[in-house]
Image 1 (cartoon, rainbow, N blue to C red):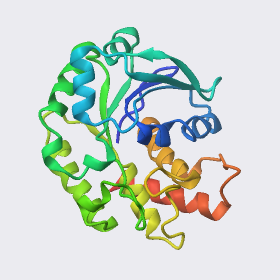
Image 2: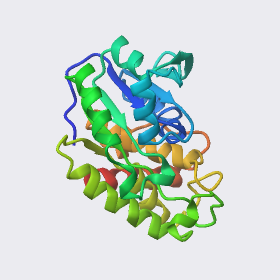
Image 3: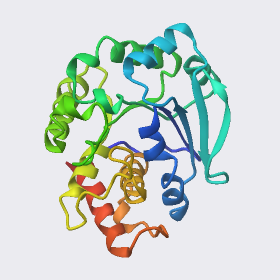
Length: 254
């Protein structure tokens, strides 16, 4: 568990793609609002971006990212297109997260040398930031994503592969990144009476998936128990909210 820094506003930079869009741009700010937590999330969005693509953008200083900012005052602002180097130079962040593209998340050979290159660069520009790894989730059982056959179109196999890479490539990495276990929370929630309802198109999250992933982020960033958070999304029933909260809390405590 990360320790809550003594700061007025928690500043987060996600080096991401559509999966970070799902996890941090919808329900994280409302969860923080409910407990008077000041937060500023910067999501560098490039659809389907893998670690290798992030690294190549970094090396070429390519202004490829949609810079999306979410704060307590403004739920989402899409700023100018930006490069990763620009983002790392222009602000000071408390937490910076990396992630693999969903289709590569369970394939060990796709992590290095790109992961270490990105970590070293982030450390050089932001030496005081805490590095995080956002774990992605397995696809729905009936997903038609073109990469799903890499996992024999089997949700459990995909999740197990992601977990294996998490242990070998992230937890055992010398950088000692903090894990944001969104994928584990989604899988735990799927095992409840709610079933496999957490994706809207087979791989991107549905509204209850947004809430579950954001609940994980909320606990990691604040060290608060999300099960006591008062925020109730209009799209969820009370039962759905509680199951999502419990699943997120269990994932963080694993």
